[in-house]
Image (tube, rainbow, N blue to C red; front, top):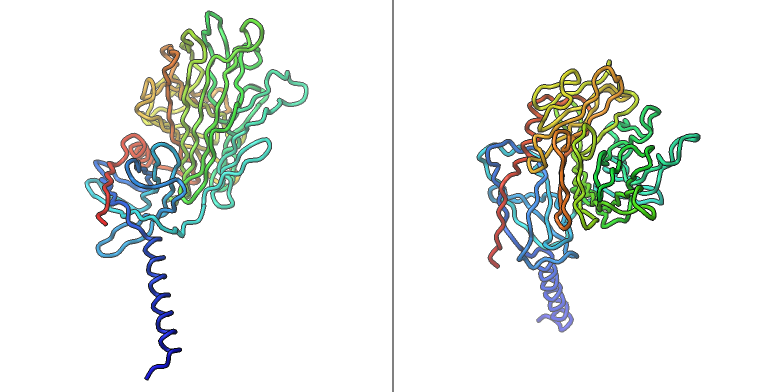
Length: 423
């Protein structure tokens, strides 16, 4: 007959198995079924998100997302974004053809995802990294102009450098011809503030400037890295010193890298939310420069080794003042060909958006989506105004049909439905 010791060991073994089963169950609690419909467009490397409103999920919960393929499930990197409501983000990495659907199951559990995208904040700037490679740098500390140049050209709150996946710097700041150019930035030029003409673009005129105010959030993870900040647009012509005319929020998000047929790319998004900070409306007057998103390209590019192509087939020769859904700016660098595809969202003002494109005679390269190019814009107190752009920073070359597909992804995202799973 079995000894008492054997009974005790058997009992302990059963208890251990039961405990492990409870642990496993608690770490893989099913939450929801998610379905993506491709709609009319091909989906490849498409960032997507869904609201988790009305689901019992906390910001501190670990989540597992699994793609359903017949009777099998494959884990897909996902990332939970805090907020009200919570948002779940992931990327459709392989091809989803027009008319096709894809289903997922969402679990509360311990994910194996590594934080590929990281945000590292230092004393003077914040950087987003994809693994060990830098994607972009946001400068929150004031950057002074070169020695001997008027200090009024000092500026904070801009993006530089922007790096290609091969490590080439694609932006430039404080060039001798325009000390007020700051990589990727978006000040407004002719602005009416309480009857005063203010210029936030031409810093040397000493009528206005833009300053970093504070960080709202920073994040990193297996799907994206990003940050949200506040900027103050300061009217330097106001009586008794500077006065805030506009409060602006930036929301920047960079997605994990992917391969395209001739190289590598990474997507990142830029959203600007404008708020009037005065009792009276602020008028962004019609002008050929200002706002949207501006890009001063690397000094390595010139009229002989760089090119611009818009969604309407325009170039540096004939693109200035025309409108476009997207614009590719690319050229030769130390690492070969690289460029940036700028995409305008359909909800942006004046979309397809007017552009400022320097002609070939300028030699250096400048591009800007400029929503006040042809028509002034009234920013009313208490009413937010938003502009959203997506960029593909890439190595190699991108055919126009790929640029169009990427814009369609941005403009017309796939339909996503989410429903609770039965327990």
